Length: 154
Image 1: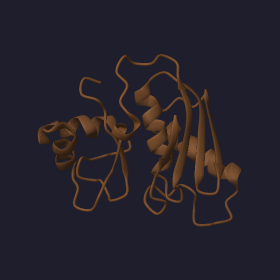
Image 2: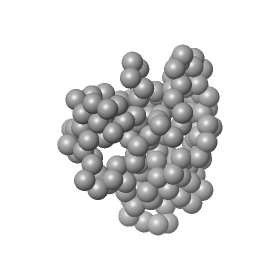
Image 3: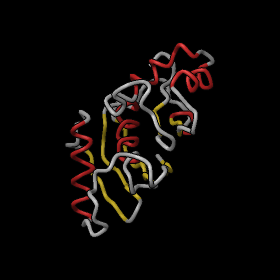
Image 4: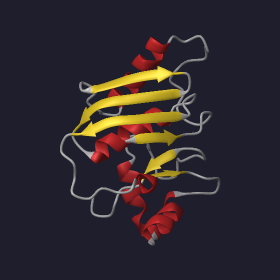
């Protein structure tokens, strides 16, 4: 659990064009996006205050928890996600939080990121699969986007 920072101006545009969008509408948009990506939101609560999203509730795995955080954080207009999610069935291997996520830099591509984090560029597909369905194609990443970096063997 903790606070994860994101680039406010990068990410999917789900709030519409109006700055006047009510917080309830923003919460509903975030929950709908999670559902669109296949997340069961029945046990998840979302709150929003300005650019910060707070997510609490229960999930079944660290992998699902990380997807929820990345979905919420990779929304245009969101700069922080406060993680208060409890994993009901913790996995045996837990990665340090700073190694669970990677912020894409200009010039990055998945095989380059894979080489940096795993020491093997050919393991890029592990990162791609961990970030599906948010990523539709391995070549479609952008600077500022935050990706899930799973432990090898997950």
